[in-house]
Amino acid sequence: MKAIAVEPGAGEPELIERPRPDPEPGEALVRTLRVGVDGTDHEVIAGHHGNLPDGADRLVLGHEAVGVVEDPNGTALEAGQIVAATVRRRPNGVDNEYFARGEPDMAPAGKYVERGIVGADGFMAEYFTSPADALVPVPDEYASLGFLVEPISISEKALEHALASRAAFDWHLDTGLVLGNGSLGLITLAMLEASEIERTYCLGRRDRPDPTIEMIEELGGTYIDSRETPVSEVAAEYEGMDLVYEATGYAKHAFETVDALAPNGVGVLLGVPDDWDFEVDGGRLHQELVLHNKALLGTVNSHRGHFEAAVDTLAQLPEWFTDDLVTGVYGLEEFDHAFETGDDVIKTAIEFSSR
Image (cartoon, rainbow, N blue to C red):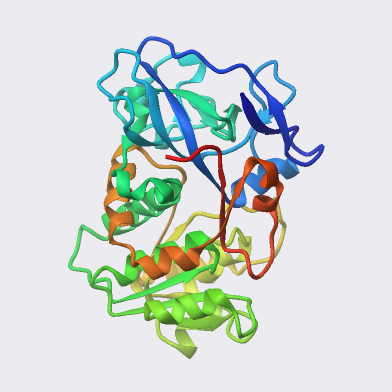
């Protein structure tokens, strides 16, 4: 079968041949339909994130997959069923307490591998196998968009944890700021707009006219240009935010988020920056957090429950939004276009087979 693999940090993705995998007991064989491309894939390609499977010289890419069950192999799944695949797996197939309680997303390094990222081949292949409990059913009508389930699940978890951190007192989510107008930021903005939040904002660094700014405003949000209003000045120029969702990977934003928050607000950090030394006024930030009951939390990955919630969210997204969000779907003969970047590229995917 054909697969797309890379030697992290040493070249561009290439099309390779791999044997079609055989499912182990408890696993199903899935024929891949589409796999999304995101910032993590670019980080893996550049060698900034992730690592190879043991003994391998290449990593098959891809962690945002939707496929159709080719062989249920005795599991509760059915042949022809559309599924999205979760990302984390047991290291060497050995269970641990995090997987046992259904929370692999909370496992520390060394307690998991991640398909297409850390120590395990990804889903950019014509077929893949997976434990049945890591395959989440997707309605047939959303098969073409099922690769969005994984990124939506990331925000399902982030918002769940952010709201949980404020659950001990009477708190209302009236204002929200998303840092980053990439695909994940836009998805999160759409999710917030679908909730009962009153006002939303999205911060980026784009000049008009720009498709992402148009999407922000069509959703009902306010676009903030960080070159004119830095994150640290958002509260003064607009208003304090009950929630700040960081999806830029720009390290200074983690600290500037504290200033953007309203009293009792919460900031949730998802970006993974490179190491970077810079000065901050730690004492003042500490005071802000303590004296105004603010909170910062980090979150990564997601579990099956978040995937199931993401399937429901996908069904609620406006059709115009997903049409504008997905700017390119490419076949294997032109897969390299899916890795291109530019202001006119928002979300791309590679199609391995049709329904």
